[in-house]
Image 1: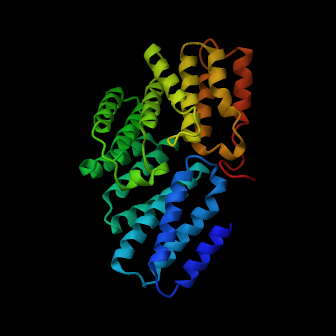
Image 2: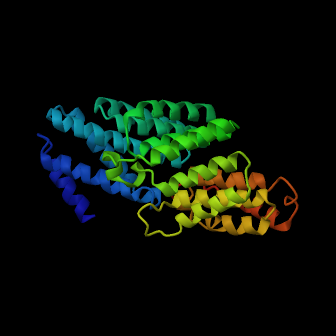
Image 3: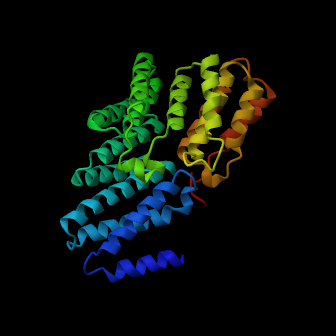
Length: 331
């Protein structure tokens, strides 16, 4: 709190003329929030995100920035709007999420930052995917991939991973296979860029790519030994919270995918074991993506020979009450 107060004082003192300290303070906040986003409940950073975005907009609207500062501030405003869009998605408001994403796109284009422009297309795909609009999700991911064709950062395999997941929802197995192949090929040629340097929510680590690959296979209904092994590997990859690539949302998604794979093999006890850590998450961690993932497990529990088992009935009842009144935010 004291550090935040000091930053507010310095930024306020430079209100008449945007100085280097102001831009530096805001850049530090973008980096801090980017690193924190995948690791903490949204409620812990939501206020700081909104305040920092407002500061970026205020500075850009002031008319007192130099051209070099304007480019940097537009990039920061785009990055902050990206995180606000993700936050709006996490609380289950896809309309607000898309409004923020379009603002992020505008800022990225004005900053002439191809990587951020492509990344925001990926976010639009992600928002559409979890809102059960797979056609839109595939469109945005393909649009982003076209924009990112000249890039070498991790945004490029992410966009193909998004294509694979969207195509899986549409039942397009050949598209899934092609997109995953392209993502693997691009992973071999990665050269970290400015977005990867920010890290956190702005990078796409290899373990997350494996999680996406498993999810596409699960959505296609595959649950053979190879997919089961990959699903267990994805869960294991997110087992260490001290790992810089750890993210509680990705961990929960990987655990739900493992539960689905085990249900495909009629292993009800194994599925219950896999999904239990997700069901035990505090309400503050239950964002929209996690809620949708658990609901996929609930739907699978209504099919096949497991549906009448006591364990299946109990899990279904628990999942039906799982979504908090305000996903990802406290009461």
